Amino acid sequence: MGLKPLELPAADWLGWLGERGDGQLAAARERLAELKALPPGDVAILPLWNDTTIALRNAACVAGLLSSVHPDSTVIDRAEALEVEVQRFSTDLYLDPAAYAALASVNADGLDADSVRLQALVLRSFRRSGVDRDEQVREQVRDLEARLTDLGQTFSRNIRDGRAETRVPASALDGLPADYVASHPADAEGLVTISTEYPDLTPFLTFSTDASSRRAVAHTYFNQAWPANDPVLADLLQLRHELATLLGYANWADYDAEVKMIGNGAAIAEFVDTVSAAAQPSGQREIEVLRARAGTDGESVIDLSNWRHYHELVKREQYGVDAAEVRRYFDFGKVHDGLLAVTARLFGLQYTRVDPDEARPWHPDVTTYDVSDADGAPMGRIHLDLHPRERKYNHAAQFELVPGVRDRQVPEGVLVCNFSRGLMEHRDVVTLFHEFGHLIHHIVGGGQRWVRFSGVATEWDFVEAPSQLLEEWAWDATVLQSFATDADGAPIPDELVAAMRAGEEFGKGFLARSQMFYAALAYWFHVERPADPTARMLELYEAYSLVRPQPGTHFYAGFGHLAGYTSAYYTYMWSLVIAKDLFSAFDPDDLLNPEVAARYRDRVLAPGGSRDAAELVESFLGRPYGTDAFAAWLNS
Image (cartoon, rainbow, N blue to C red; front, top):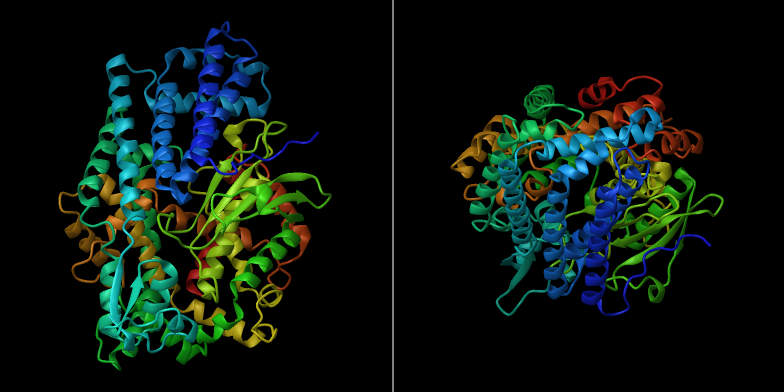
């Protein structure tokens, strides 16, 4: 009988979370005790390590997911408490000299290649945790890790719970699509409410012709979690620095980068400056175009409140791309179904909808699908949680529910986004394709023997590349026409897609500079730990961003990536360099060619983290990855 997906509870989520989370943690403790009781060099040591970390990761997955998506605050609180327990166990585990000695005692000469790689990486993780230091240092590490877990949760919680609203005159909806206007009725005072949720925020900042109201809405958004996160971030940065220096590193960025493709912290700063310099000429030209257009409306500065608006106007007036016209073709339901159809054809997959009574998701919005290969062999299960609600994670990300392990458990992934239930902006379609790329990677790469290598388990600065690659399919006319139709069923015209692509080219320079501002902030905040984060943020805006900050705002306080990606936000652009090279292997005139896609699936996605990312890419391309494709794209 085949493996079955994880059975979710019919009602008692709090009890189930305790059973699943506490049960898996207990199993991890038991397997670890068995491992340490074995004689040195025993052949069962690595399999027992696998058992231990499977259970640990299972507990971590349910804690991380439910703390971000469950509608019940008591379940969220219990999930956050479980996250603390998981982190405490993980810290103790990697500081355990007996476990380290047992794993080190295994003779690598008798192991296959995957097992040799596993042993080497696990032992490195132990050493990076301080297992070879004295007990006083190990106790300091334990204390710092526990405090960092608490601070990271608080930082993210303040953002998640920091949803805010701005009331503006109903006349501020001038320029907005009719369906948006209809969903924002005026109150008795003639005011409408705009929230910081993306389906509210982005269309308003893009289409509203009311500059004063745009500034008010942007001011609210870019002050999310401020000032609450100021002391939290200060402590987070300081304690990360203390942990890194305690372990012998110059700073957190050096510690974090050691296990990534980039190698060291200084290389991050160099990469950020290199991309910034490359993007400067085109970015400056683009900003001058936006500034000239804004000048006709009496505005002289392109800032956080108006760049989307004038970017949209330039694309509409100079490239013939009207986002309001474009969105007519992107009904959420059609996009949802089209994405499944496209990825099924591309990667040789089948999706079977699971009845909600069987799937029993945490919210009625969630849809569930079983994934199988072209021959019908089960591969995993996916859950799509795609609309905003109170207390839900308010960005877009893929979460694990179950890590796949060959012959043990099927991979289950969850897509968590915040899209409109009606018509979508095309940029949201691109985001959906991007995040689905992570989900595909999790499922296709989930057939590993060792859980360490399961799914999205490559170096962290590669993990965005498969997702950025899949974005390319959201710009192809043939692909879009397979699902993007208007209310009468007419597919999106070739000429409109061509105009969209041309319009998208405009802006890549100044937007790359914005990305490098985010990357620079993440890096320098960790290296410098500024006493005045607002002042340092403004200096970095001046150095890297061509879009001006809005006075009185504090972007960094709501910059959720500082919790998860820490100093490594550069990874998005690093991955894009590789994604552009990967895309060069596909025929742009036939993106649905299954042969190239199958080779990419099998050589890049299916191995998970069992090989270094550079090896995976070289296996697919037939050569080492390079920067030529990225440079050609940036300078075209």
